[in-house]
Length: 522
Image 1: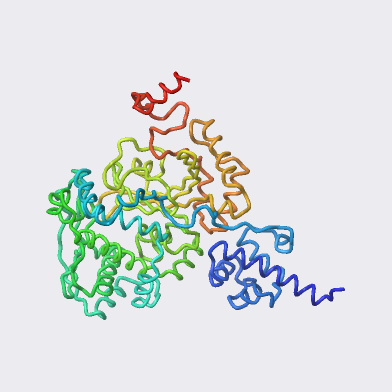
Image 2: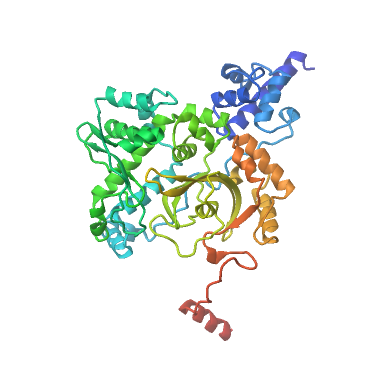
């Protein structure tokens, strides 16, 4: 017969193992979980050390403490003691890497390094794609494959900033001085310069680096501390990462933000220096975000403020910087981020969840689906952010997304839209619910109501629970408005009637003719 002590020890080990499994499935560290508990109830929240002892079966939490932990994971207390309950993994084993799935490079002999070195410049030349644009595609693929995790860049930034958050503009200038960097100010209004897209957007030269140690900064940034800090942080990054050699791009915003002379020559050739510049721009930008928003403090901050876009003001950073950092520091890996300029071109893209592009970032698409949140925001004048839940079907693949979009002005006074969102499916799966069932329920509701409808109650309950577990408030706010069906391209619209004119039926191709001949001969 088991003694009371043996029974308690067994319960403690069993409960601790379930808490540890839940925490790891949700990508939380002990510190993350402790902070989340403190936000719910500081008096009953366990410390990091006490949580560790609970997980190892050395301590039994009080009822109040267990209620706090249960609240974080949206579980009933009885669930922690139910030995018949199987825990579901957070991430589906079907996909481990981020981004869009690649294609097999077969036959292998055609994709040799020598052949690619010849074929890629020809491909870019015929497609009118510049070396820098190609570099950005490579970088995006690298980002998405690694789900925007770059610990070496994070560490380099933390070594400089010592994880202090927030850094003021004065703090950032002081860091420049400590590193022997001299700031020189210039005053120049936005220009409309040569632009291959003929968009006519104003371009503001914000700052640039002059080796070996001078940063030229536009006086106009003094009125925008968040932008001033970011620019200085990128130049600090260049000094740390690239030894101040000066091989990096001018910091500009608006229309053509690269060297105008390069657009006339890059279409026909691929200069490795252009790709190097693109990579260094990315490294400096990532470093700047990590310096201003260090990983662990920012993760805790976002959890405390439920990923609110308004919280960017508390850190004195731009909304765009905070959104990009969400994708890099969140324990949940399935994020996407868009920065879009009218009439419909993406300047920045990240898709750790593999979401299709609503447009291209090399040129405009001629058949965008107008129901994407980022598209809608471009055509409004509201300054308020908007949350949207969307169902996307791409062939046999069905996804459920929620995003938060906001229309903002850049430093050159051009309007654009920044948008960050998550793929909700993996989080639903973690709750032991089949994502496909939830997605289909929402899809059918939208399909029967001209493409948009309130999320049905059962699905809404699951999504609300996921929002609480992830501590993302705008996922809950997405339930307050109608969900929408979105498409990779408007020509694939499943709505009835279709929201655009369906393309004319194509003429038969040789494969069709072959199939007809075979069928008639049977």
